Length: 137
Image 1 (cartoon, rainbow, N blue to C red):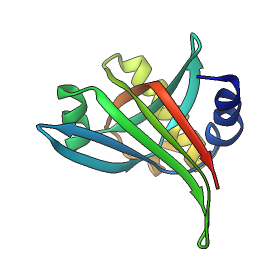
Image 2: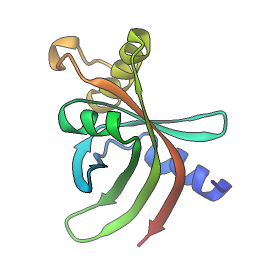
Image 3: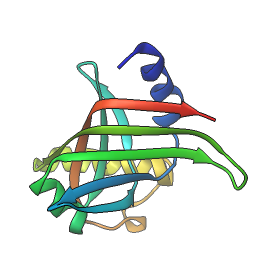
């Protein structure tokens, strides 16, 4: 990932309270669903973390190759979009899940959120980007 892409992800994507769309596929049957995410860099790699369950989780467990799409748009136009192709990992460690849960909900609900505002459950899925494509409009 080049430095311009890395800078864009830090400046525009990391703190944006936008939904991402996670695309999975098993047996040539694609599945796309919205998720809330956090972004960080680990050892120079872009990592998107999300809590999920159901079909998304089952598909990731069977086929970890995924795509993630995020865009900023208003009612009249799209400002930018990011397309990520990557490999997903399901984290089983409870402390990792708890930390990710707190980070996701703080990002989307704000620093004063309470556990009563959120639902329990969901497994932690981390997507490490293999490629990132950014396009501005």
